[in-house]
Image (cartoon, rainbow, N blue to C red; front, side, top):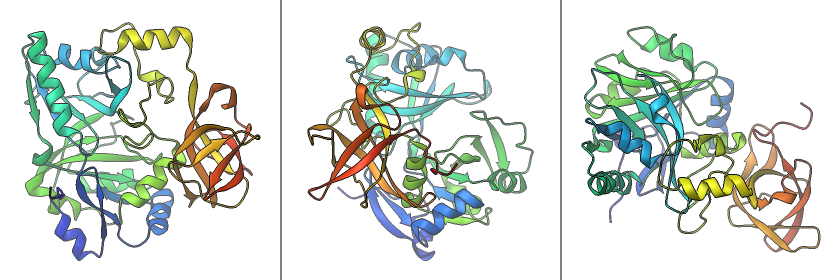
Length: 365
């Protein structure tokens, strides 16, 4: 099967980007270098093409009821222009995907739009349609992924860049708030959200205006490589890597996102998660810092001091900001306290590491 391509694939190629396969998409992994792009976002600003993220629209009389029953957070608490981070779980409480759900203004064509991760738009669309039909709800579900490009402008200077490019003020948008904002030729759904730990915005752009709006932002273009190192420094989950419904099923409490679970609502997986909330989790998602030399990677074993395997690294890198090797992974709760000594097996060698709080910080801070 051929890879899906973002609307600006050829433009990125002309800018010198190199590409990688991700979630069934051919996406830019870097334009200059991962470190240069990472540093630009931490120090000034960068723009990411994140058009591999899906957009699912839900409208109709039962749009709220349908979305409420298929996500763990409380969508009834959202006013127009609000959004929330949420999980999509199965009957066992395992995370199928994480997402951001937006409630659109009353005059919009849909009630909600939510953003599944790369390659999950078709299966998530099917999940909403299948449950709508099973439950006899009156809602229209649209997979609008191919209709939009999606850009993220992130970094300390990002709010000023977005304000300069917009035809109207965006200063009133707080974290996790969104509105339709005019940029050049198009109204774009513009959200005060991001995946880097820095200030910024994410824009859903009508696909026919993608190039014109991309060109409005005079800052460092960034690929998925820097996006990964930036999110990893913050301890943010990556779908398909830090959890996977088939290969590494995890519930929200294990994954450190129990705050997204509202047990006073009804949703698929609620009863299973109530049991976890009552009985406690067995494992916890933690940060790790290597003490010895080496770089931890996905799939490496985490052991105790007796070299008994207690967990696995799910994400790891050499942190460009800290210049230290860092990782994320799961360990039994008795090993989860920051400062606990563990070991990571790297190419057959056992390396000393310590459990660390996230977002990661320098030891001298």
